[in-house]
Amino acid sequence: MKLIITDKEEFKIPIAGEHKVIKPAGDIHQCVGCFGCWVKTPGKCVIHDGYESTGVDMSKCKELILVSQCCYGSVSPFVKAVQDRAISYIHPDFTIRGGEMHHKRRYQNQILFSAHFYGENITELEKEVACALINANADNYEGVVKGVYFHQEKELEGISL
Amino acid sequence: MKIALINGSPKAEGSASGILLEDLKRHFSGETEVLEMDMRKNSVPEDLIKELEDAGVWVFAAPLYVDSIPSHLLSCLVQLERVPWQRSCERLIYGMVNCGFYEGVQAELALAVLRNWCAKAGFSWGGGIGVGGGGSLAAMPETKPGKGPKAPIHKALDALAGQILEGETQENVYVTIAFPRVLYKLAAQLGWRQMVKANGGKAQDLGKQLE
Image 1 (cartoon, rainbow over the protein chains, first blue to last red):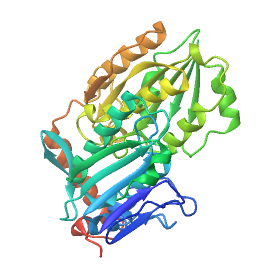
Image 2: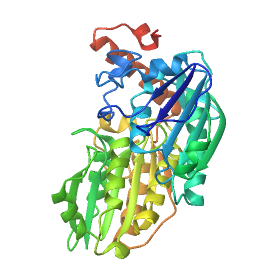
Image 3: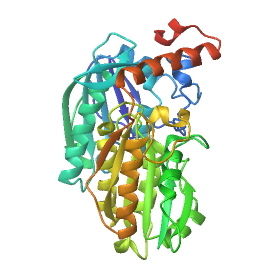
């Protein structure tokens, strides 16, 4: 299954195969740093606003694809909120990988991770940070990066996932 | 000189970001006016924007969430970028990002996002500190500056405060607590087990897999 997380309310990009799209549909609550998704209801966020199960969705996906406005090299606030609310995909315990501390796996699927950033004036420094962030995310999900792409917003109409 | 200390943690109290800002604030006195504020929600109220207008220095403190700054703070930055500031070219921005991971360098990309935001907003980036072992700061007893597990952090804060007061910039500095990584890792694991039990669960629930 492909899991797409996007800030585009009207998402018209064609997607091949089985998929799920998480996009703005009502306000999303921010992560409040309570760790309830690890110690109260392990595996699921405790805030019930329709965005509490992304960690479970990630456990079922083969590919995770972000389609997001590029904000200073980061994804947009909406996509980041979905990511922040989905840390239950991983286990709270630490492990050491590549000489650095990361979290252990909760699930065994290995995510193939890609990101399509859009925006009109994305700078080279922002592209550099965006690529590094997707790689860092993949390290923490213990996944593999498929690709990081940059587009003008209108060019999104021409891509397929 | 007016310095805005901005706590970007979503937590109302007891945050590591708040502790870092308190430790930094101790360096400012006399002619330095300190403005303290929280950015805990997705937007910045108008009255805070007015207060920020007069501050020539802003210091953001935030936790590391998924390799970057939390979504609500990112949302606030997007809003602040669009404000027609009168004194934007004179404003100097610093950042302090703490992470639950042991290595402070894991905050590097969050600081880079703040730096990139400065470029878009027309502000100057002054540099920052990435702090590892942030998960332990709230639990640490108060120690004299330069003593105990927080000593490396105090040293980095001393240097940052000096740069702020001089109006200078610095390269990012990455520090961690003076406490062995293996013990920090064990302490965290013990903490998660205590927390899950306090919530009526069992240790093995921490690894529960949902369908």
